[in-house]
Image (cartoon, rainbow, N blue to C red; front, side, top):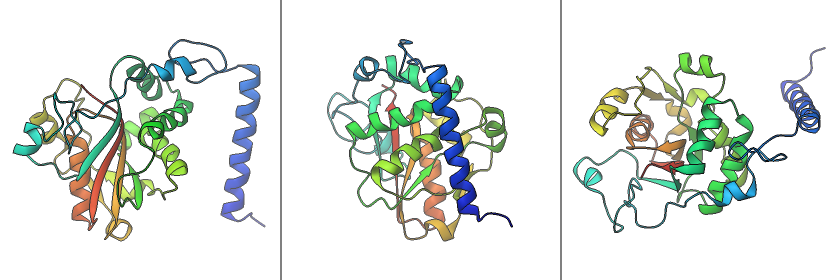
Length: 243
């Protein structure tokens, strides 16, 4: 007789934790930044993260000389209500995010989520559901995991909020690499790229989680899809913000 699904998942989860504990004993983790043994991220490197500060755009968190609304948000209002970010995307934060995304250091997601909560202890006002920025299925197959989803899990257990399943917000179109793209190009690349399921988000305030906010174009496109599906409001939450 097959085991109930929940029991099977609990057994699998326990087995994974046991295997990881054995591996950590035999091969202690090393800090992704300074390589100090015994840590995914050592305390010294965590303390070197530069906080974003208060002189930011009140809507997209772009660093400014004085707090207020940035010119971009004033001229082209994004679909999200607000993006909140913890750190400047530079130095140790940048290296840690690259390790999480490109060096398969999945275990970094939890200490990074803890670092974010250390700066932003509470979720955005009224948030009822956490949702991760999705990867296109081809990119997900290539990488094997969604780093934003791993960060979301770390936030969910600390903020005590439910998580949306991956199919609630889907990426329909694969976008080209946008590292050097300007805002207009990024916005065009993600226009209509996402779709959301109405039954999961209708009437709810959703917080969308990602690693970095660069221009806010991706988060705005996600917010547009969620609002079109009936969400009441959409916030963005990111570990870091580009200067």
